[in-house]
Length: 365
View 1 (tube, rainbow, N blue to C red):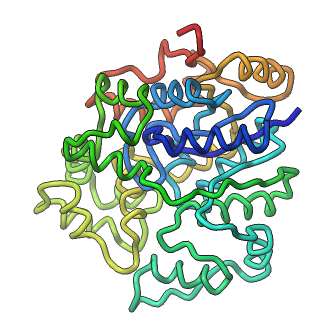
View 2: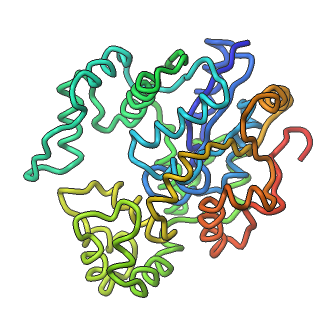
């Protein structure tokens, strides 16, 4: 049985994603295609524009057989840890092949091995930005990640497979230059422009009928959290380093919106994405032990499937895998951080994200 896996955010699912999924099926003919997909928060420190249930529905309706949630503890992380968590879930789901998109044909396996032979760090030059330092480091290893996010994530996926000595093959689909990108879709939506030429019809229908959210909706809650918390309390937040809590307390007072706040806080030491992720941790009041707890207690939260995915789920049920398809008393404890994060989203959308929610089943709901 050919079990293929992919890692995605589908934020939102656009025509490029449809082309990617179709290309996997046409090129590799998998028996089952599994997607590990970010939940309600995404890697660059943002809220997913549509909630995880709608995005899982889109994925299943448009070609994926089974959708597994990437928990917030993995999803809102830098590339290395994002990849570590996602690969961990795909390995738990017993995939034999990972497939990802790449802007250029690159020998990821060789470059990943090369990086593993050094200490994996680079000397930070504080005369340059953190992002530029990282780009230069990877270029010295033979790969360009500047404005090529798929290259960076792909390399990290392969590194994690090698580090964990997993028996997972790797295949790639080259992404051709196109006008399709989730960033472009979100920009058009933010400026009240049509996206009908960028997304499938079903995505368009959901974008019109569902509440979409951004950081602008949640900045008042962030401002309250920072203002009402002591410096000591902020210091306990996951990834709060080098006295940043003092900077947050100072700048939040004069900030009128989220982007202005970030501009006042940023420096060459921190990429904007890192700061956005940190603000998610602050908003959710995330502590390091909560992140570590998710890593220690692996589970597969099922968000959607078709008949093929359902059959494959039945094989997983027979193995020693912690599958979650509904939230009860037991699951409430396991999903403590996820539920808290989703409750923050509900402050604006008023849509229940966990209790009473069942996976999307194609042809049934």
